[in-house]
Length: 177
Ligand SMILES: [Cu+2]
Image (tube, rainbow, N blue to C red; front, side, top):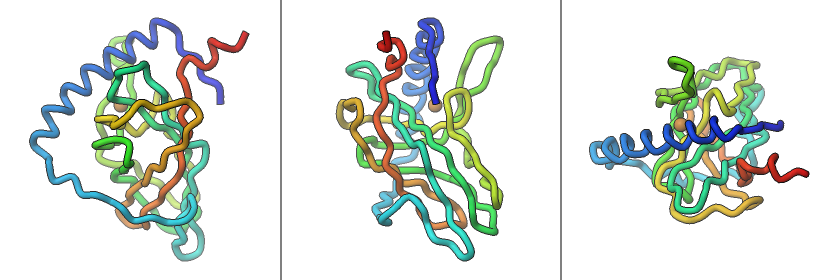
């Protein structure tokens, strides 16, 4: 999957990220409960009755130095016979993860938190730029390109699902000359 970010888009993205992160700081003052989800499974799928949930193409966007907020993307597939709802995620490299959705308002790309994303039986849902994504707040370290970091998805009716996401530079395509 190749995604090209124009300079204008990137500018908007950064403004949105900054605006969102200051809101998040305010919000985090109210929810300090932040449960730690340290459950670990061995692979990227969680067995659940007849089938399983699967994650593929997971990646985390590398942001410019000093940036404490970034986004993670992946493709989720539900091979079980029941609906599951992604209701959260956690990772050791960030203080907090929210599920977000991008949308256009007055021609400007913006984003907002969503409570969950429904994954119907047999269906596939892509978390991708311009749509759903995981927003990582309070990055604890600088992320280097090609590193892998474990992210764990939390569902309402299905087991936790950990996967490894690779760090990818958003400038990657501009370097291909
Ligand atoms: Cu977001």
